[in-house]
Image 1 (cartoon, rainbow, N blue to C red):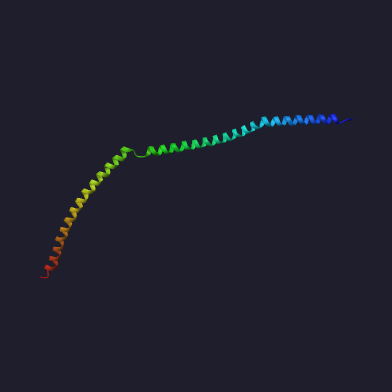
Image 2: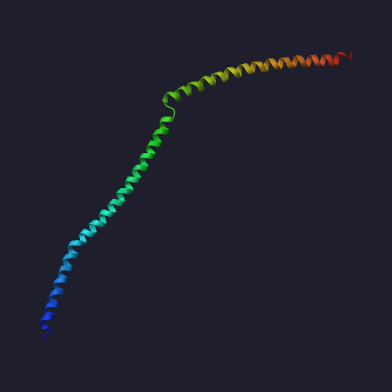
Length: 123
């Protein structure tokens, strides 16, 4: 039996299989790369969606905080009230100074009475 034709057939089949493998690699490699890139893009997209949801929550919290803050009219009313309180304090200071002067005169009179009473009994 001669194996030369069998070797030729085996060489031909392996050559065809190698050629098929080369074609398979050429056509499937971009597909695998594309699939991997698609998976990476989906991962990044889901991360961006989570970040967008977190930002939306933060914006809603900031809007709620901002709506609870006093507005321009509230601050103006507070300014007017502080100015009025300043005027009231000036008025109270003037009254207190007047009362202090009256008390000084009253203390002088009481001191004189005390001195008279203490010294008057000795005469």
